[in-house]
Length: 114
Image (cartoon, rainbow, N blue to C red; front, side, top):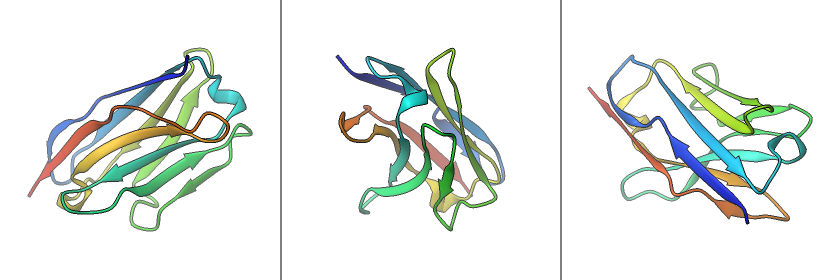
C-alpha cells in the first residue's frame, strides 16, 4: 500500500525558508518520478517541481532558483527546500508519485506573511 506523508509546512515571513519532506512507503522513490504540487487559495493545483528516478529535476518558472527538490534514497524521502519565500508561495503543498501509482499525499500548509 502506497503512502506519502508530507511535513515541514508552517508560517514564515517573506524572505524566509522552509524545507518540506515527503516520506514514502510502498513505493521506492529512486525508481519513480515524484512531484511537488501546490494549491493556493482559489487556485488550481500547480506542478512546482519534479525529480525522476534518474535524478533529473524540473522547476516551474516562478520557483526556479529559489526551490530545490532532492531525495534521500536511504530514507525513501523527497524534499523541497524553499528559500526566499514570497507571499504568493502561500499554498497547500502536496507530494505526488506518478504512474503506475498515481498517489497523492495529504498535503502540508505553507503560509508566507508579508
